[in-house]
Length: 276
Image (cartoon, rainbow, N blue to C red; front, side, top):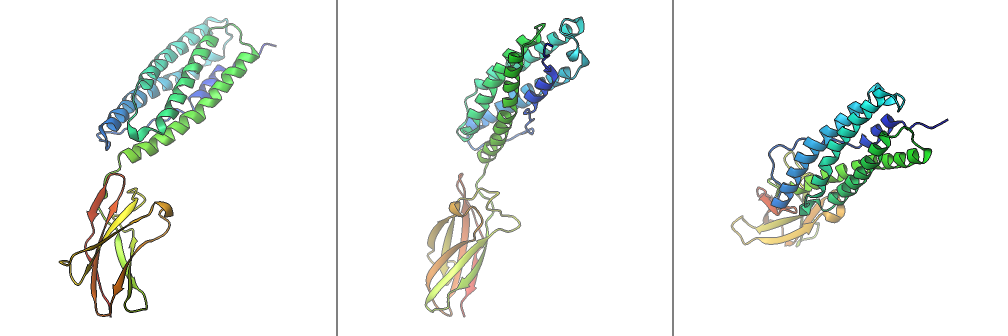
């Protein structure tokens, strides 16, 4: 018995990866080239490719797709599906023509792989739709193509979301809290440990390092500046700065600013400690 290609099943598999990106609204990436790229993705993919794919899904669900391929109902259905696929495919060259902004260097190759494979799938399945019979070899090839699209599309959308977040990172507008501890020896060391608070999250702000200024005696003194990175600890360990040579009875102040890929953020308030 001739194996019949379950076209509706393949369409479902192929389109399972189509995830509507959240509407971006008014936004501006950190670089104009990033903004131009993400705006185009939003317009062409979210507002074009995705609605066109939804049309294909609706047509694929129609009962006519399961009718004998020689029937009038099936032939009418196949033409409708192919026309819908033609519209869907018309967005692929537009997306491939985009020049990715620097922040999207990881997701753009994934998009291109996904789109080129989708283009190949459309070309194959629209030819198959019009045939009176399909072979098991053809069924196997189309199934393989369809199965690949879901993971590829999901990989792209996941990486795109990461790239989009990085492209829209702003310099921190808030700063961490400082708590102090001292070494037992005098003269000794004063330690300032940084921590998140209700308005500051190092991870959410993609903080890569901190700048701290120490003041001996008062805020009018010449600051002692030091920096420290948090890249290697993955936000799991507290970041601590050390000021050496502190003495009993001394008053010490510190303020800190967080730094991410965009630049240095706002200074914290002054935190002070008087050593007994």
